[in-house]
Length: 270
Ligand SMILES: NC(=O)c1ccc[n+]([C@@H]2O[C@H](COP(=O)([O-])OP(=O)(O)OC[C@H]3O[C@@H](n4cnc5c(N)ncnc54)[C@H](O)[C@@H]3O)[C@@H](O)[C@H]2O)c1
Image 1 (spheres, rainbow, N blue to C red):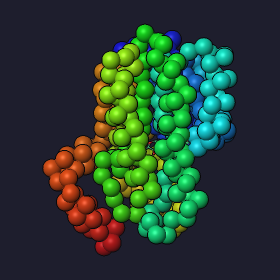
Image 2: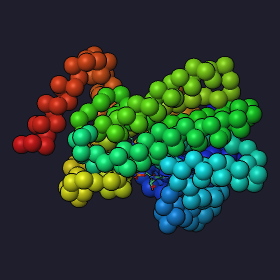
Image 3: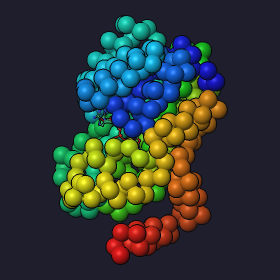
């Protein structure tokens, strides 16, 4: 989709980070943005900022981990707005660094509900509507951790590999339709992801370490995603780290885990 003017665009998780900047930039390009988040206060702040700049926006509180809330939102949205042109499945959460054997069942279930089922339910809810438009885009946010699996991130990697598999399979199925399907793989992006997550260890220390390695701003990341969608790119890598990780995973599809274990030890266990 080359031009977003007057297009109806849903963005999940728009109360912070990349979702918020996607909303700012798409509204500035003349789109009508419909933003959801579990956090009523931050999604309202995003809405207020867009209104103050003269943009078209409506915010909704929707827990992406709740099938019931997603389908209730769909009913309300389609009655009021009739159609949708673009869906960004951006909402997501992380667990701080933790070995798999230490992860509590409730947290494992929660991250799968939000990161994997949230994407699946939002897609099932709105795909029939996207298929009715002359041109439509579905953009699902995976991660570099949907390309490589790394220690202390088993639950997160599980969900992000699932998003990638879901998106790539669906892309093939929809390849003869009006819907272009993209999968986004951000590297480290300076957002609140490390602070917003569930933590087992020192939350502030983890967030500070994350900030040290996260090289791309949320604003730049949103710009890269939007450019990717405008050019109908199906795989959108964000940041030099994402490009490098993607290549290392292809050059060393099995041995990459030894390489990243060594890098991790050098960086954090000095
Ligand atoms: N920041 C990174 O380095 C990075 C890297 C790879 C992938 N990602 C992915 O990018 C996406 C955006 O994350 P971000 O970095 O902007 O983080 P962020 O924490 O700044 O923003 C995520 C937003 O999602 C919302 N959210 C969390 N749980 C939700 C739920 N149950 N229902 C609805 N909204 C919910 C949060 O409230 C927040 O507003 C996520 O899917 C994340 O996994 C981020």
